[in-house]
Length: 262
Image (cartoon, rainbow, N blue to C red; front, top):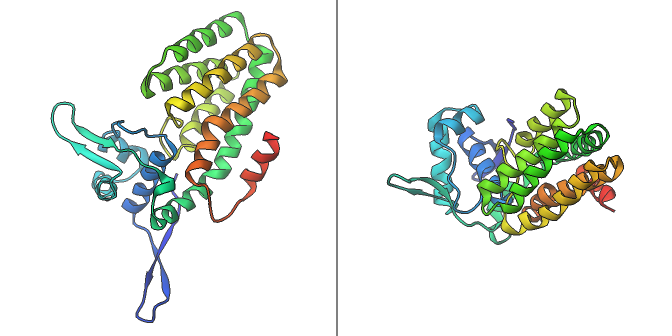
């Protein structure tokens, strides 16, 4: 998901001229946003350079430059040895300085419409699944729910979450709708195939998962859609809002989500 951004630099008279951001700056901002939102969790290893380069459509050297920038900000650290790599450090966007927050704010604007779009699709997936589910679909969801209940860290929680939502999408009996739901995960998480995670978020999502699976199992389509919307707000939209509590403009997605949430 490429996007055009600009920084500003002062000239000799003190006023500022826009400067196009380099590719490494754009990649650094996307990784920084992923950390701020919880898509990348503290202690988690960053994907390999070659994988990031492929995902973002840039050269590996561009990724290295982006990583170096984030190491300088204290967001990432490199570890050597057999279990080495580049790891995420704790980062609180609310405590970040103004310059960092200003760099992140445009990303919030970029992703708003995608979050709104994905919310609408997730509602439809849940509604359709409740109308079309079969016994095998319900069994698959219940198994994934049990795995989510037992998950003890970010990796196992996300794996179980993907299985549960994958089973939900499969229950629609429409491969196009299921594929669209999968594609929007990466689009709405700035290129990383995972939603935000924290132990607290896992616990909140667990109760919602139970209610959602129950609504689909009993064939209550409207309840399933309402629960899917509420679940998406808590697990995906709210972390973005928390990370970017004061974006420069409050646009259509926030107003639409506010109406839907009331």
